[in-house]
Amino acid sequence: MRRLPIYFLVDVSESMVGEPIEEVQNGMRTIIQELRVDPYALETAFVSVIAFAGKATSLSPLTELYKFYPPTFPVGGGTSLGTAMNYLMDDLDKSIQKTTLEMKGDWKPIIFLFTDGNPTDEYMDAFNRWNAKYRKSCNLIAISIGDNVNTQMLGQITDNVLRLKDTDAESFNQFFKWVTASIKATSVSVTDYSNDDVQLATTNGINLEKVDTKKVCKIDENFVVLLGKCQTTKQNYLVKYAKRMSKVEMEGLGDVDTRFFKLVGAYSIDGETYKKLSADGETNRSINTTEMRGVPTCPCCGNQLGIVVCECGNIFCVGEDMHSSCPWCGLEGTLGSTGEGGVDVNRGRG
Image 1: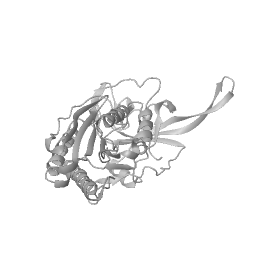
Image 2: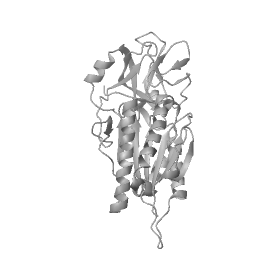
Image 3: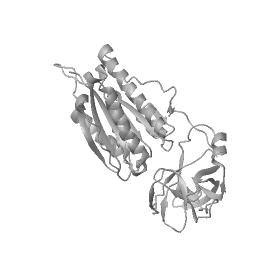
């Protein structure tokens, strides 16, 4: 029997704690319940779940649909996407049946990658391995849960990048119905037409959008503008830096012009008005904190540090209490150092 392998590669990092991970848990149950009453899926589908945070682990090996029971999702620290991709590829090598002279192998695997943040590990070696050996023989669908993910980064490993714009219960419910419909359509396609390319359901009427990862977003290169949120008042603010050039003497090269950005100020804004007047979509452009000079106080509450970067990639303020709660994603923790290399920060269009 030819199998249709379906992998769920799920981000279980700290930023997923609470409602997001609960919705994914409920969504997995819904998918399996719906697929079990579909004759095409029941005949062909085998399901596996891999969870990843700082490390990756298999929560369920590739299992026949009628025997599969959705696992309980854990939570861990970090978002090691490179580690997760390597774990997935190793599992594909071990679990997928290849076509031989005697028998046909499995249909092209479908992988649904769910993530709500940006990688915290070195992922390019894993991406290169994927593109060289696995991309053409697999159907990878990458889903950004919310708008904090660098979708251009995901576009390096798949043409199917989608964003779940809202993360309320109803949006998750509609999203998992879409996943189920896509799996059903593909199981019909492989059974009746021997076509193993993934058949994605329409996204009309749901808060799910296809992302054009090839689109280049233009920004004002003379300024760096960062969108923050006050931890105390939950009000939005902008931090503005202006480009400056300076000469640095380098051995053997003489004076070399180098670029940096100097703090201009921080300004409270009306978040709703800002959103209405801003161009659609994310810039997917970042800047390293080592390129910026100066740290403002929060213009909304006066907290001493107006630029603290959460694991979710967003900025908020911190006062004397170093134990903080990110007003964007709710993640709690203690303020730490970024080290010599700094950290990449999402930037606006300017």
